[in-house]
Amino acid sequence: MCGIVGAVAERNVTAILLEGLKRLEYRGYDSAGVALFSNAGVLERRRRVGKVNELEQSLAGDPLAGRLGIAHVRWATHGAPTEQNAHPHFSNGELAVVHNGIIENHESLRERLQGLGYVFTSDTDTEVIAHLLHHKLRDIPDLAAALKATVKELHGAYGLAVISAKQPDRLVAARSGSPLVVGLGLGENFLASDQLALRQVTDRFMYLEEGDIAEIRRDSVQIWTAAGLPVEREVVQYREGAEAADKGEFRHFMLKEIHEQPKVVQRTLEGRLGQEQVLVQAFGPQAAELFAKVRNVQIVACGTSYHAGMVARYWLEGLAGIPCQVEVASEFRYRKVVVQPDTLFVSISQSGETADTLAALRNAKLRSPKEGGFLASLAICNVGISSLVRESDLTLLTQAGPEIGVASTKAFTTQLVALMLLTLSVGQVQGSLEPGVEAELVEELRRLPTRLGEALAMDSTVEKVAELFAEKSHTLFLGRGAQFPVAMEGALKLKEISYIHAEAYPAGELKHGPLALVDSDMPVVTVAPNNELLEKLKSNLQEVRARGGELIVFADEQAGLNDGTGTHVISMPHIVDALAPILYTIPLQLLSYYVAVLKGTDVDQPRNLAKSVTVE
Ligand code: G6P
Image (cartoon, rainbow, N blue to C red; front, side, top):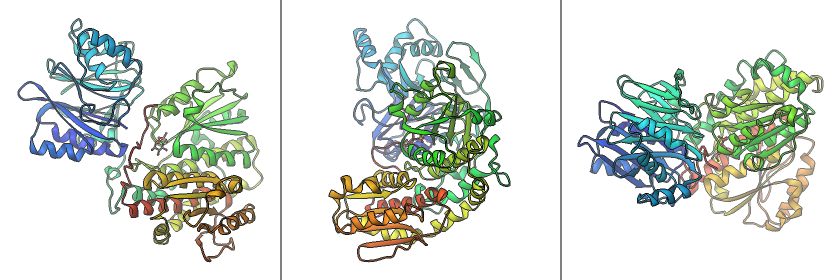
């Protein structure tokens, strides 16, 4: 998705802006641009379709310099990914604007501004902001004040930054629905859509809140609320080690993040497990009282996070006896939902900024429990300062650390751990768990990082298996019970990064349609822990073999499945059934990774995808 960087300093800021853009590359984008207030006293810009590298090369050949500047990586929504549509957008050579999000009323604004004589040079919604602000500046000369008047007329979501050739000592910004953070330096200040972009210049940050307008000068930062009142935002010191944005010994961020899973799962469990019980207060001081009232759970999420929710449904119903529904946020938010009494709303999100998930939470909060609304909201999220966390009643933070690869890996397994903690907490408070289950699972959770390490040791075995896929165009993933969402996640990973068409089915559905697709060109991947569904799964596998389909089975070492013609069995360490979805995710992540490497795709930044989808 789009990313913003801005700087106002006494030195040339071009290199700072470019480095910031590079750090935002992981979000996925298709063009990049920069605008500077040059030493000659005019606004200059350079934009390029493609990677930041191309912009950098162009600037190396023909440099731009200035002490005030803004830069952007764009992920096309309105208008194709062309140089003309790339940001920054100008108005009359006087203003430069970069914008994340979508301006929904851009068409009517465009007509009005064209009527006022403004000439548009792009197909973007963003350009209306530049011209509207230019128009406002006629009556309101101060840039921040004019921006306040401008945003009142914008409908939709935005995080935006503006510089003006007429007021070149400042950078102004506005946030509504798309995050922005101010980075504080010494005699210089910065702005970005993600603090990661600024970590090379500062570790002190001020997060803008919804509706905030900011004026950033070299030696001061002033912020106003949506109501126009001056406000102070807390200065936060960043703590995470700077190594997070570095691939280290690994060839890709995705592989590094896959291998970080034992460590981050351990971190997610830290301080949350007692001797034989989950510590319910990890969810917040009022959690125990609230969980006692919960009669139903509604989970809402997107993408990989949605798959984590699907696994949790098996756990909440199977272990804690709590009815649970799971829905993708883009559907949930527009549906007239009938809420069962005492339903806990649970959102799951790596970023905490996914537009659909946030909108679903906001809708959920519109009605109080007495008016037929939800009992309370809980966010399972990886970013403590995200909108989702700020707007939810309860939070459980996954401790995955920054995830750079667009295809989510460690965020997923830590979400699963968090959801297991939720299941056990609700079950504990309500006394609905079978005797001994909590103590056993707490013990098994403690061992989980070691188990994940064992699964990661299969790396080179899985790398060999990946060769079976290099020439294929279609695959099927099968699972039963809580392994069905794991199969869905495996299929999603493969399609995201290798562009091979992959479908997941509950194994029992095979004969109701997908079996028609099975032939020797269609590898079938299956996850087979040793549980009560194993025998049924074995019959499903026979159905595939009988049609000449090639089977790749990740099976429990005690499952009694063996290699044979057309059947490749990869033995997995034994694990208690409830935690099997977490363990079996690992080989599927490795499989998609190695297939993508063989196919030579852009593993960390797959085509057309974005890390954090902050637009609808
Ligand atoms: C995008 C990412 C996925 C992610 C999904 C939800 O599609 O590419 O990896 O699962 O958004 O993101 P969230 O941050 O809400 O978990």
